Image 1 (cartoon, rainbow, N blue to C red):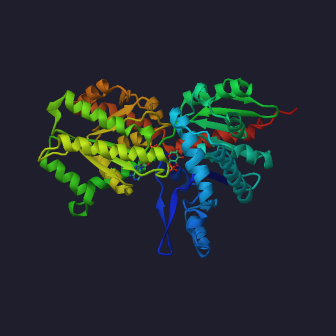
Image 2 (image 1 turned 45 degrees about the vertical axis):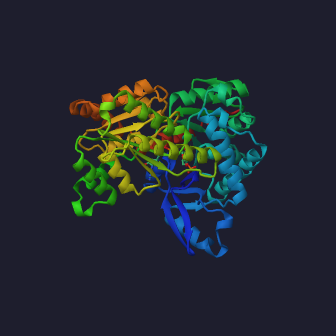
Image 3 (image 1 turned 60 degrees about the vertical axis):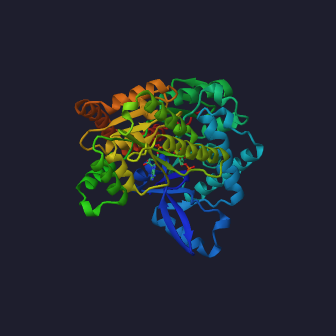
Length: 483
Ligand code: ADP
Ligand code: G6P
């Protein structure tokens, strides 16, 4: 039976070896958390990197690794430390990630990175060929694997190939600075269908194809010599039911069953019932605007000092890509900022910022979502931002206020949130005040609309729409133009 092959750098689980035994921990990040729901409910094989390098892996554990991955419906692409350096930390996260998030000054154009990226993309393409049949459908994910569609197409001219980009596609003026821009576009054009989160990313991509490759583009179709490629936007949803149900369960849990974190949050509420909890959750990434958010919080407390001791900012930053220098610098900057602000403003009864630098189990994430009066998410650029959607899904009594950067892809679908420009401190301070004082009825009315939309357009619907657009192309038989 034909199956779907999902392929991404990051698998839904990361393997770790402790004292000779293997454990699988869930991956963090929108791609893994979103696709996990799709994968678990369908006949699919997910191919990717296990998170271990060849050097980390004693040969006698290879079989156990394969077994652990198989239990999760996955298969591995093996990478050595040099490949991980050049492909993952290098080209993916020191060249493409900053460039596509408009951090041009962080983007490094290193030939070695590029060569390793090409070689590793070829490894992923080879793994697909090895593990799939001609009539399987291939779904390639994200910026780490942009050459894979064309590499697979060369060997499998008739296979149905879809590609989805989980990060922004930048405007032509930014993209054109990349030395290997044509090769990246040609790699993507091996697909039959290319999906983006928003119409703007789609438009930017089509404009680059037209201007850099001189190809004929009509509406959302690209005409090649012998093929037509469809490009469309599919804003990714969340597993709405999973988040709502987890919040309901959490609400019913007996007091003595509560996690330490929940206990601490409850104690906080009991001792200071008027204090509002403001939550932010992100991977520790410069695109998320965490440092700016902390500065904006200080600005808010200076502009509206009456809220001192009446608000607390919880920052959960998940460690990410810590071998990349920009991420190390950011970690240091945030540590210092939090330390300085807490040092200057804390009182005997009040610490303005609670800062956690770690990954938390799912239940604790739900504890934070359900205990916070306000979610404040201020990315400077973000392909989508699923955290915004998850927060709303957990608000089972429809209370809570979402403040969201207009630079996040999710802002396009979340008009009822309080949308802000993360660079505008004045606006952010006023919006925080608006959120703190927002009447419950207004919160509920805004969240009713948001929840309806998120429930309807959930991650399953998202995946089905992408797959049916890909299948339609296959069955309509217009993947190829007869010559
Ligand atoms: P990105 O994909 O850039 O990391 P998103 O907001 O789209 O940003 O996705 C982040 C995902 O990671 C969410 O699904 C969220 O639930 C998950 N996540 C974030 N923080 C944690 C954490 N501390 N522990 C576990 N999962 C987390
Ligand atoms: C974003 C990217 C994903 C990536 C995730 C976590 O969501 O779009 O491709 O997996 O961040 O980053 P990491 O580098 O840990 O895979």
